[in-house]
Length: 166
Image (cartoon, rainbow, N blue to C red; front, side, top):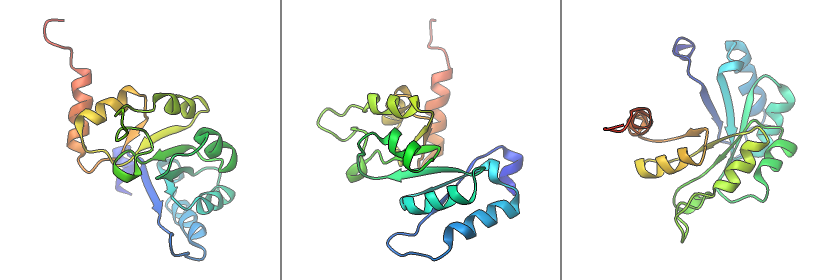
């Protein structure tokens, strides 16, 4: 597995909606176990029944709830009902659950804090704008899914570079 040498975490998304694939969670868990990759994999899905099935089959594999709609008490839902490890909210267009495309244009920092306070990661998808990436980082998200990793790399590098004259 190439990612082993690179120290990368692989997000395996189970895409089972609108179709149901019998036994998909079992097959995914078996493959991850066969590869000895449980500590380097996160299984995510919009199909939260599949996440619950993965959790029943393995406590060693991290899971994450993908969402495209705002949830009431997302930290509680993800932690208590799914026993998952992370919350993956959409952050753009019709899937914006964080407020970036709202009238105020501001990130829902309180929601992110609440989710993080129960020990969950908050990994947003899919953000490609550097300014919005900065706002999400400042709001303490733990990860950003992007089509342009070079843009995210540049945003992160700029945060580490001291400003001129300081």
